[in-house]
Length: 150
Image (tube, rainbow, N blue to C red; front, top):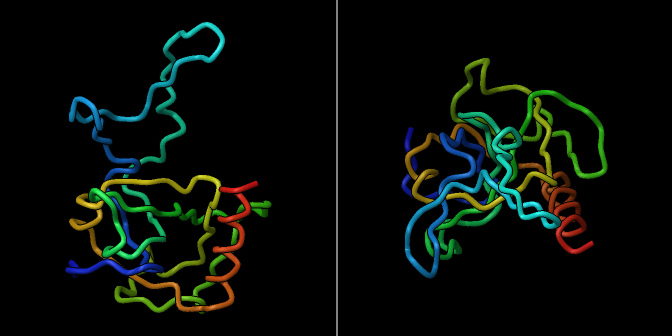
């Protein structure tokens, strides 16, 4: 099922994470997988930290709030390891549109890997669930703000 409108707290598989980003100056797209060392300026490939495709993501910004077609999401992992910026999402914390075994499982929201990605990418994906537990939503909000503004 491809939804026309993506809501905050929807869970979807994102085919590209992160998507290419458009330069505001030259308007060309680039993929954020390289970084220059702040000491020697050597360009370094950091693509190994970019999650593999496709990746389940918890949508954190309503589609109506996306600026310049950019969404914001929190990657989800099926492996639970406790951590300061991780939140366990149990099966009962969600409602699912697709009840296949690869989708209905507990997941961990990895707050410190939250990122912006292309809204055009998410528009082509299938939403398969929604985080419905208000306490878990508030915990994710609090940890995300702690991480962003610490």
